[in-house]
Every structure is written in C-alpha cells, then in structure tokens.
Image (cartoon, rainbow, N blue to C red):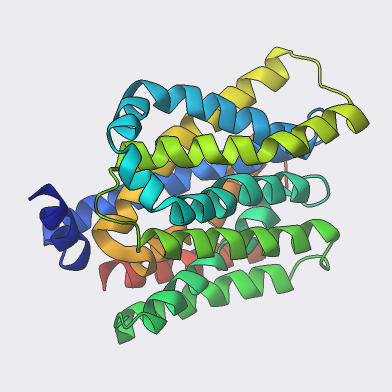
Length: 299
C-alpha cells in the first residue's frame, strides 16, 4: 500500500504536495548555494578530491542513525536495483561534487552558481523524452531563466578551465536528478540516501588515496573543518533528502525551475562572504532568473 501511495504521489501530486515539493526544492537550492561558496573558500587549503571524500564521509555519518537500519531492512531491494543505486551514487555523489570542487580552483563562486543552472534544462528535456508534458508556461519560465543565465555569463569574463569543469558538473547533476524520477518505489528515501552516500564514498576511496599520496593531507583548523561539516551535514544529508523528496512530489522539471534560484543565492553569498563583486548586469539577470522561476514553478 505504501508503495502504491508513493507512486501515486509521484505521478499526480495534489496541490498541497506540490507546494511542499516546491518548498523542499527551494530549501535544497539555498543550502547548496552555500556549498559553492564553501568550495571556493577551500580551494587553496583542501584539495578537491579530499573535499569531496570528507564531505560524503560526514554525510554518511549524519544519515546513518535513520538510514542504515532502513537500508538493512531493504537490503534485498537494494541488491535487486544495485545498478540503479550505483549509477546514482556515481553521478550524484562521487563525480558531481568532485567536479564542483575542481571548478572552485579557478572560477568565482558566482560563476559556479550561474553555470549550474544549465542542469534544469537537462532535467526538463529528460522528462519530455519520457513523455511528460511540460506545458507552455513552464517552458517560457525555463527559457526566461536560461536567458538570464546566458546574458549573465556572456556579459562577464571569458570561460576559464573552471567554467568547463562546472559545465561537466551541471551535466552530472542534471542526469542524476532525471534518474531520481525512476527510483524504484520499494526503495525508501532514507535507505536510498544512506546507500548512495555509502557507495559514493567507497567510489572516492581510490582517488582519496592518490590525492593523499601526491598532494598530501590538509591541516585541520576551524577554517577547514567547519566548512566540511557544513557541506557534509547541511549540503549533503539535509539538502539531498529535501531534493530527492521534491523530485518525488513535483518531478525534475518543476524542481529544476526552482533550482534556477541558485545563481541568485550564490551571487549574494559570495558577495557577503568572499567579497566577490555583484554588478548591475548581474542584478538585471537575477531579476530574469527569478521571473523564470516564478513562471516555471507555478505552472
């Protein structure tokens, strides 16, 4: 019965559930915005792979109290759908975050947030290919928000290697979000979260060993440990749970429309925390992005 209700909620969300999905998507987006600023702040003190490894190890510990037991109860379902869980772990945990941290070495946090808004386009395209009707209003909202992003990036400095890393990260996250729509109903949210964090951390172990050998470790200080705790607990355990639930309630396309809020949040945070400049062109583009989010989310 629970599985039937969950499938029904995913395909025909009632207005109250849809509103909850939008709120959860917004929560995840705001929290994730801080992770871009954190990645940029740690770029000269913690190597990218080590940032990713410790982030997911902390996240694994954070979700273990409620996810480990559920994962053990659902171990047969996890085994049956092992390929799906492994792919989700690779795209959403091991590869995506490592690419973001690599981008943070050479590109400003604001640019990272802007480029990441390309991922909702992939989410929407994937849903359309899967037979989901997007609706004219949602398409207009999506195009408006994308137009703001394109204008913002086009009005700034030329692409750096970090921007290219972020494009790859956006592709990974868009693919991960589209994949979530196909999550088997028998896999509970806590079990899925714990298992993907576990698999993702395990996938990062070889790269972590190489990084420690070649680059050496980092010095634990409040300036390194506290940001890693933030991205491990808030940006991973809390935000991924909220995002996965939002996808289940409203779908990847509508949640992706809300995700366009991210460059606005990142730009404001990077200005307040890192002192990165926010100019008039960025403010104009933020208005376009916000307008697109309102149209896309309300459709």
